[in-house]
Image (tube, rainbow, N blue to C red; front, top):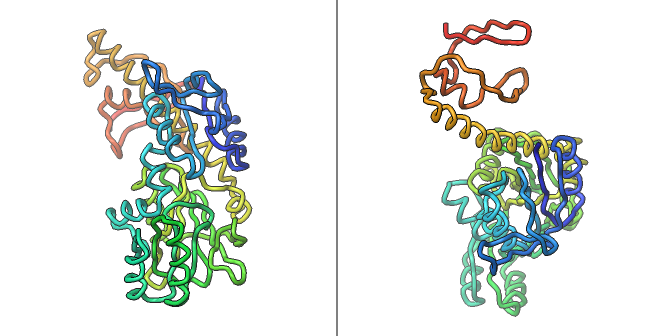
Length: 360
């Protein structure tokens, strides 16, 4: 029996994902993130839901807005030892801070627009005097294009600076990449781009976000853009995320990532059931995660019985078949016992109810 929970703010995208997961898992609970709390006063730190300890699940998919970063990171750090979780605890902090995202991606040589961080108005003035215009000014935190400002000239940027200085918080100054008001969103699920679209900003708007009135259109990514999207998700530690890019004259650059992307816009634009793709991936990874424990236990049983698993005679091992397309994946324990290697040539003898595999 496989059980799962989706911890979220109950968005349409989350509800779609829950419904698709219910088609695969034996039990799926929708958990309201706002009703989760961390109990630090107990002998052991507990995750509570509506005042009661959160039940054990085989899979927990936690997602939510940047306002819940600390809670999402804590939940993931506490639960990822016993449940499969697609997003690393640190990913929430990094992805929801544009500066940390910039630093992490630059460290891995993933292309991004040239960006400056300014914590004071005086420091920002010096930067504004040196950069090429137009520029983008934005806060490190925020989603759906909120807090993003466009300045065509130094006077315009200076006026914005006066307003930003009054807020007394750091902000980013970023080079503007001319794309004609078009950006790219790719949804990465388990090391694959399952859907991609280009978003066109409405007239008079620089932001192409769907929430800002942008219009989505299905897109086949270039090999370079696809690699950048996959590398970004891997570096950030998010097996499920959206990667937003701009395609400038220098090639694609990443502008941000999102661990809780909306699915309505990209599903409508691409006609791809992204929620279904996510559910299928979570189910597959949860089975693998649970089977790993079963394989480890089986290996220990063989060892306790005095059987050398690397040189054993024929044994009966009960496992569930794992089909990938037209292929059957062998469990780790079977490959360890047989000594078969990846790509090795073998002889198959299929019979009704059984398959014999032998070395050539």
